[in-house]
Image (cartoon, rainbow, N blue to C red; front, side, top):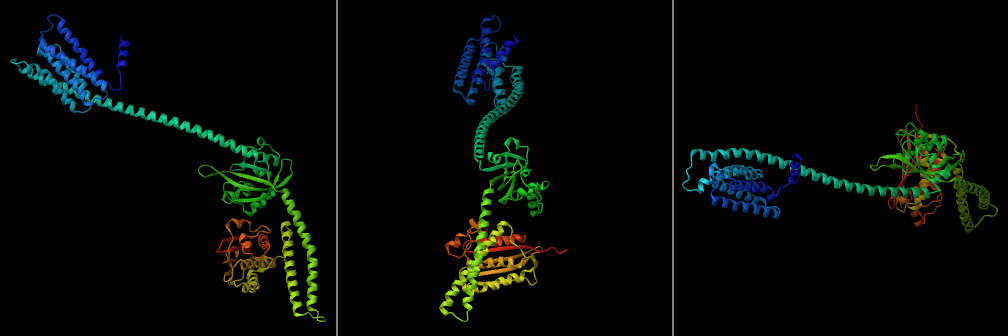
Length: 581
């Protein structure tokens, strides 16, 4: 029996019962009541007209419940059905004994329907409907006596029904709220499910793209065989090792990734020297100064390409130009470094041979040039056979060009010595005020001829340091002569010497044609000439800045440049001052 009732309950259980389903219990109970009244002898007295009219009213109510159910959402109009049902029950009571009718309890079925509707007003409707249903026999039957008990029954019963309706209405309200919550929860869960499926689909697509990008990256890395590409974490542990690195260093990827550190492939003395230059930089690599020497510039966001010596697995060495760049995550946080190395051993050997050749040729040219200058001087000073003015003019042209060629030979020889690391320095105590002032005075005739104004600013106190006064003067001469050459007539060249607590700063600033920003990193290369120089036919061979840079570096200084095309250029030569105890 319990199983049967459960099955029926499950079949009747719906989210929103239709008017037909709500009306069915009332109709069934009404038919049973009419059947009992008609077919059970002596059960009750029957008034045929009232019973027939009640049956008709109930039939109309049931028909309307079917029509409203088919329409979908009838709204408040569906309450016409329980209203007609109450009228039908009232007429049935009137036709089956009035106040003594056995079928008064039928009132509860439509009352429950009305009471369960949304809104408190339906509680009052149930009370009024109950009262009218109970009192209707007395209202439609003329001459029927009504006792006080009958009137009280028409008032007291509705009050009880009203209390019951209030409970039903509240329970229905809570049930609707719970149902709405469950429905909202189900909707949210459905939306979350749809979103989760969409997210899973996007994740799958992103994963596929990530795999494709990874395959592409690996294929690119594998295709690079002439250069080594090595990736590390923040401690220098290798996690990327391409075939180019395997060919260059003699180890396969599975022998290095997660097992070896990048600084193991460098000469310890090179790392130590670089660390000393950087003054043992702090940071996340402070506990490993050798690794700091490799990545410090990249860690600070500065691009750097340096030549290092790699140590192969078999102990042999090779010179490699290494570019270091940081690896960052999606938030821009550095998580490691990439080292791209190019074997420059052969290129350096070619450069060495070229320097040797230039040095040899320079030496060979110096002797005949000195001889030519000597004979030219003898011809000019020969008192026994004096030369005419025209001959002296020709002789002056030859002498100037010979001196120019001799200076060029000297520059070539000096650059060859710089490349080999053998150019000499005559170190002594140098007063920079005198060096700068002498360079400016030497350049004033050329500036006057070019129509360029020159100014000089020197500190009142003497600025002294240890260095080669001749080479430092040469560096100042080069910077000032360049400024004059690159400044058009009417321009200004400003030379100044200033100091800080630890440095002396020589600044040569001009209002000339400037240098394109894209060419600034090439200024110190041998024989390089800026496009503005070639475009404006400024004379020169491109060795002055190379020599100046070498001189400054040999004095443990630095040479910086600031330039804007069409505005001017400033070279800042910085030299360390001796520390005073």
